[in-house]
Length: 418
Image 1 (cartoon, rainbow, N blue to C red):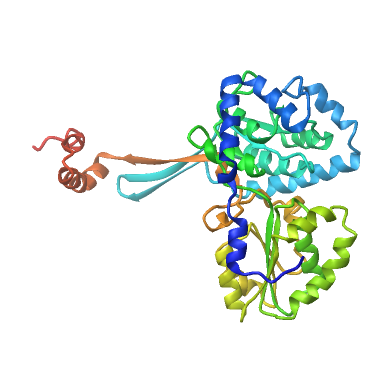
Image 2 (image 1 turned 60 degrees about the vertical axis):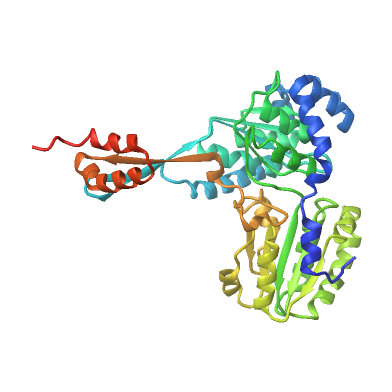
């Protein structure tokens, strides 16, 4: 169903549903906390109808996976991995920088990678080897010592090959909220991590949000969504293909067109209908379109304002002057500029990251990048002269706050008056 919607409809539709599953997720977390590996096995049998056996994936299983994947696929995974690595290497900050801001006062920043990170890789309706590359490679580029991965069993051989190419150190057969709990709390098989990254359904997202007192996370990354900004110059077939591409992810996915051309939605729908009819995932697309639609704005400035308020995960700009519009855009997890830049390019091959904030969180969060796997420490180094230059300010403000020991820590370093 292709429908005209309001900005409020979109926002209400995309609101996090985490609150609706809190009790279920809390029960799963408690079960993993109390029972460890047993909980992972029991929950895999309950939810996935799978007998796990060994939770950790062996080297033999990884090598066997290569036997089920064509050489062409391996080479294309390696090509994508190279592009992802290259782009994320460009994001790397210097390990340490120092600058003398005035005589005797040197300031700087030291960037340090995390030691152990967990990547959640969705399974179920589809396997996502591309998400393995998107989560693990930036972590490796950042210098993380140990990168682990959890994904539901049975694991697609292509996912295992992708993990090997990306340099994942440990792979575990566990999915859902229980996998997030295992990475956060630890079990007999899985040592806890410092941070969990990766997309997932409402249960996975709920577990990430509820365990933030135990482990850092990237951001809420739920069902996929796209917002398209277009004017009369846009090619309807291109828009149709992009809108359908995101809808095929999941019944909870959503696609939105915002345009200042009142005739464009009908032209786009005319292009969408035959594409949907022959799509292998038609049933999923049809359900996702119930969450989707179009908004007609008076002009492009209003269209941009609406899209900034929506803050979509993926933002496609298909207008006459895309760079002008790009300059006015404030919110978008990943932005795709021009008619020949499909979102699929960022999903697989360009090198940018496809793990992105959803449900409006692109207004405040950045997509996954190397900084998510690092922390920074400020550095200061003062000479005797540098401290003397700051002493009056330190002592005056510390005294005003009643922190006399702070004053003394400066005074004891002053040379005695001659």
